[in-house]
Length: 444
Image: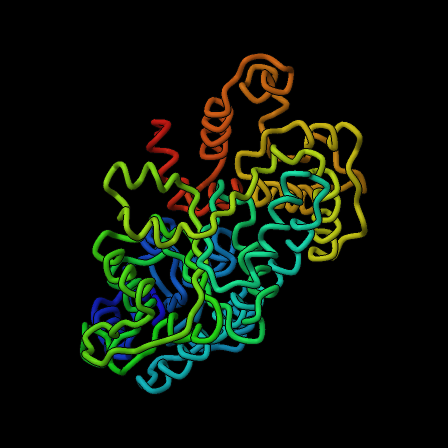
């Protein structure tokens, strides 16, 4: 199931295409203009954008270019009744996946859309695999705390016990989860990731347990869930605290009995799936606040591994930064670059509230925007060089709480970003986490 955004200034076309793709099992939304489409893209992610070429105020080509600037991972297909070679070439050069000419049949647009969706999914999988490879140095540590964690994780990997990973966002819980699977006897079977923050509760239930045909609007065929896909292997539930209470109840039964029914189905399905869960929130506090089931917490809390924040392993920061800098230079087709002594000192002394994700994004930005072969402090996107900031006070050894540092940093990044998604990417956290932190700190 994919999420599609239909952009066309003709109401009938929007309505008909939305209805058609809903019947094909996808979720769809529509926008009557480029401006409306950009607003919707700023609020949520779509797997595919189908946009008309000729529209008032903003053309489809202009919209495409703006989408690629703001959300380069989004797959875009242009539709037009004015099919020319020049338009097609311009669209493809601007990053369109494909180009279809009106009038088209529903079969034609479905074929193009399905290929585009598959392309996007394959690219996302490749990116995830690349990220996992590139973040491997995260586990190459000189920190005594990290070395103890890795020793315990390797020992736990050999067992069948459920593992709970806790720690701040961006510390590498997903990397450690994948490594635990690779160390385990299940290494030859699937490692399946479920991000609990990205879907509504109904869609997440379907994603986990699967569904049968007709169980809800858009369920046009039976579909197995991620737990079935991980049979014999490992399922990793990232940010499990975001499961709703109703879904927690159903998941508790699976944890206890290793069986479940698909959404809308009556057949009990049994699987041999190992569970690794992760959370950046204090689950004991969530239990006390009655937002997380106590019995589920104790079922998950068999072996708990706390992944340290980057500031707790400062001896690793510089070597990790240098490795990520080399990888960013190769990825962006640049000659090797190095850190100036001042930049290296700032990186080591900075608090890194976004942890490894924030470090990686900061270095990526520096590589892209710097014109020299040496990265200077001015090339880094952080407010740590402002003498009046809590960040600078913390670096100077003056009193500044971590909350003050984090609040000021988030406020600064939000002010400099066009969308929440852009700010979240800069900080190295997901949009849901950023929204919660904004609410917590009272940032408008």
